[in-house]
Length: 242
Image 1 (tube, one colour):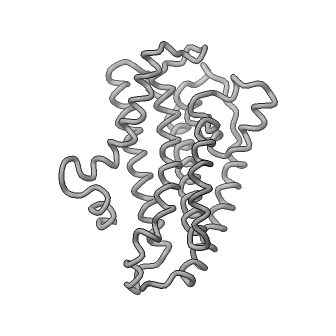
Image 2 (image 1 turned 180 degrees about the vertical axis):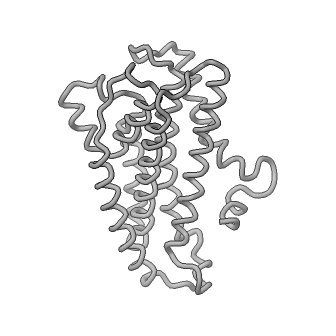
């Protein structure tokens, strides 16, 4: 993990703090643009709180999956060492991305709550539960995609356009309740939407009507976990250090 941190961020400038700074800057940029444009999404939800709860969660699973995609190719020489397994490469990147996104989410929340630009969560345990489910989804997706990359580079080529398509459907910029009934049924097929809805219920309480099914999201994450671990075990046999 220390090697990964030094390789990615170096020891100069902010160093490892960029792990927190990158998602924080993106979320701040979106919140600033929405506020400047006067967007309110037709509701009484504070725009800053809406942006932070939505885009912080999206960046967590999206960045985790994207970084795991290149985990094997960028750390191939580490497989020289007998104690380093393919799954270790994924675990390291997953932990780093989840830690960075979580720290960014907490930092921005505390900052804007202290500035009275957003209110504290109504139910902290619901927020934590939703965030942990999103973290599980990000870890499962990263493990699955990273392991699949050992079979074909086509996975990476397909993932990039897919991630752009999933971004606007992930629940970051809308509440499920605002959509027509047919559209609600479609977006609720995406597991990450359930996690975002749960986080927002914890933040905004009864001021919003949320739609989520945590057993459904957990089942999808569990299946991705099992498939990802199976592929990772098989990938360790396929990948041979030079």
